[in-house]
Picture: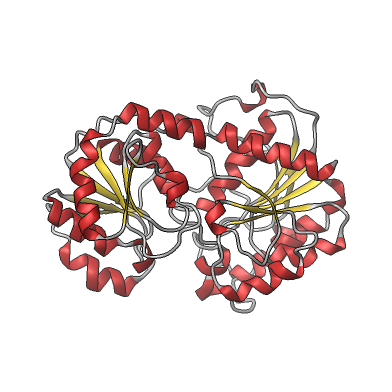
Length: 389
């Protein structure tokens, strides 16, 4: 399950100390050049219809989670979608990710699994080995797609291979000095126009895209509203509870608890299994079922969200989204077509009442046209071609 773009620097902020007793020696953990195949029911991406001049591409993923993620992991999901799409177009792709990752690309791994999934791993140690593993091989590639964060930029002047860095949002203003320092060679990609920082130069804005096979058109017949994402004040979980109560509909909450105090004080007291149900983190099958059955998704964020994969996931099931008019939401949600943009609780309650009038098939068609994996991979492939000349 996905949420707003929050990277390794913030997701593992409490675990980034020095080497701990559980750190493993890299010589015991390197997996290089092999392919960990995707499940047998996955499509044969090598027979795709798109073919371009082959480029040797390194995709550097986050190692907070496996690629693709088992449930939560928006950065890892984007890296997976991009790598698979590039392979399908005939490119020679090496994915730098955890050793348990599933990919049709070549896999290079120094971490056995995601450090958020195995708390014995030291995040800082494994991120250092992970990034070094790429840059020690940097000259083997025509272009590097940095889906990690700001830290790889510190190595980018040590190779002539261009580094295209996707900025998955700014976890803090304190990381901006790194992006400023490498602005002249950074080839930065914004994930929405709303998230462009005025101090930086961008090569492109590329919205995220989804593999559509895992999402089906739902009837919205479950009679409930849905909150899908991290449980955190920024994501507006408590606001969703209030809107659902005033709209007279039950609310289902799905997602990881990222702020324990917020959950304990403002969410959990309302969970009764009837008016408010908390189902925890969900995998792809349950996510599709929950989205498809919802009257609407409530995405009442209290910050300027850089993108929001959960919103797109909802739209491709035909479920309209009631979203705060902040950040990237006006680039994703089209009022009257795929949901509503609101400026407060009163607006949101009214929008929920009007959600039934949304044509769910038209909502899905609009989302598929704008947010498919094919569109995203095409955008990156064109950018890589331009960068490599």
